[in-house]
Length: 278
Image (cartoon, rainbow, N blue to C red; front, side, top):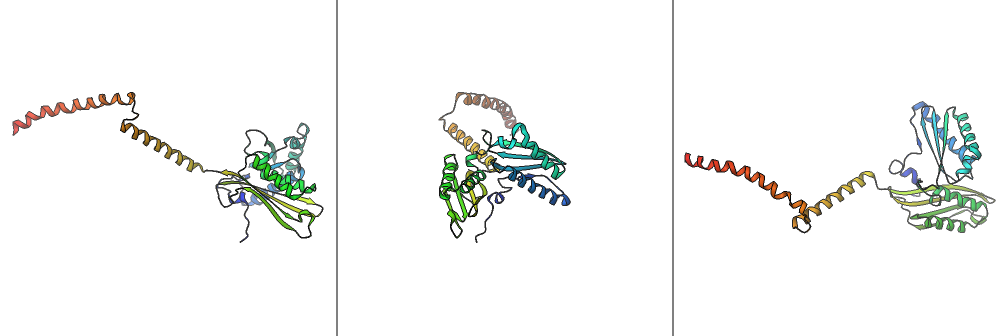
């Protein structure tokens, strides 16, 4: 009892893909894994105010691609791309491989999730408000209302630590809508952040429910069933004569007349022969 599972890892391979896409042998695996951890930690510490949602990494040979999804692309890119070049050189110096850094803007229409409904950005926003001495209840309520107003189906925000400067640490949470944590097909976004206050560190967790992800096989099965049902209805109505059209009925007599003429001819010729033998 009481065991907590990360919602992203729980659905990994079911509805969510991996955030690092590469293949390595037994010797290189540990080295590349530590490189990925260092890359993510370095980017987040260097661009703590850039509103970074996720960092995806792909590898192929000695080439590394780093995809940064952010709500503030101007801070990540810098003036004339200076900040991106600095990041790329730092990663190349550490990994000793060719690196390409790509920045994805979350504010564009083609983006999957908006900044207002992204769990990581909501958690960072609450943490920044707590560090700025905003009342924790107000910060949590504001995050929940912002996400629900922007189209989320359910939000849950939890804070833990010395809330309000209390002597003893405690945990409080707010929830609106539904957040089905046990449903594997439910798209639940999860994000964490830490607020470094004068009383100590306060942890923030955010869950955002975006609806269900129906598997592709199930979608194909439902489409096939719908087509079969529609065809059966058309056959049923045409059999009753309710909605049969002239184009459907026209070829029927011609098709029936042809085989009748060919079949009756040999039968009439064969009748006298049988009679003669008898």
